[in-house]
Length: 354
Image: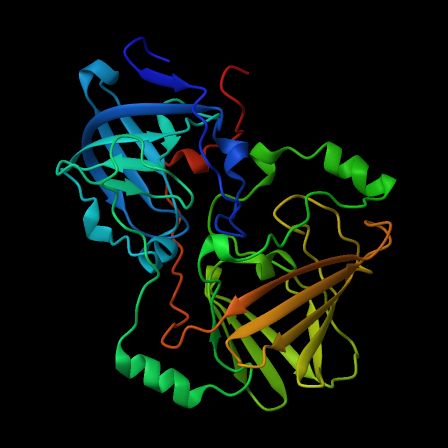
């Protein structure tokens, strides 16, 4: 680091585990044990998926170079009341966040201090660094007309489902998994730097179902469409179909049926290597059983996933979570766009200093 760069070491940041909020592991790319703080002028803003990006021309006393900063995806920020016009090019700011492990002059930005003294918290679970005058993060409200339309069209599970506040739901992915020896051999050699997608490649099964974005069930009669906002993914769930000549695919082949009002889905023929963003080698015999169950008041959709794969896990694994119904919510276009020239696109990624 340059001598004029103020490096705050040992700052303990409260990091709330956010299911699927980013499609790559932050700790793989950023040194979460350190926090860089610098001041300068925003030179460019990119408000689009997969992540919001800012560029700042640092003041001379902070090195005088341009920094690239990554933060939370725009859909998440907008739903928490952080609009794109709050940080625009030409704004003088102070920023803080962990530095990149891969390249110089890149960081993840979590705190921004505006000229008027307000502090923008770009990540859930953060406390202000410089002031108690933080821009409030609240779940987005909806127009009355949209709410009434959603209430009129809701039919059982056929509506838009949301995750709600990040700290309101339990952790979906497990802390550890009962890997077989064969699977452990692959997991131990996996490199998070080169192995995680940082661009616009969509999430596959079962990783997709840990998403923090809304999704919608649509009744097509003999099948059900599950529209996931993240990466504009679409799953087709066939009802009471007998398996025939089925091809393998990243989302697999899903067949569903109703059990006491709950939708039960069995997915096979999965060709994905992305169990939960890590290169966990699911075999072609992997089988996923999902259950979607409405609460009595129909305000919550309870979810359970059971994954069976004897080549990867020594026993079936069970994970669960839930979504909530917020009338007026919509599945918006994701419209992911790669960022040419960004640190996320560098070839042959290696840790700084290696």
